[in-house]
Image (cartoon, rainbow, N blue to C red; front, side):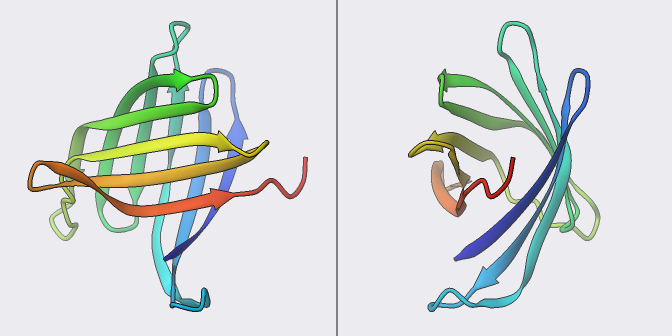
Length: 129
């Protein structure tokens, strides 16, 4: 289980963001910090989505995708690069979507033996703004 925090800032033609995750025990209590990510979202006039991600684990990835509908977006890795001490996790897929009003659901899957399997997920609720 994971807890996820996001921070975003809107710029002219991209969205920059920062994300931290924590590992949780069976009762939902934080046990230790996990992955930290930062990156940029870029969306073209034709709704092509680019997500550039750099992680604290030594992994840099480029995800490409399109909206599935007005409330959900699916992206898969196009390029992945691990540092010499980083761990290459293989192909990835991410699904983002608005659930029950303004909550944001997020799922990351990784390819294992030719199939995508869930790795992390979160549901984020707006608290201000």
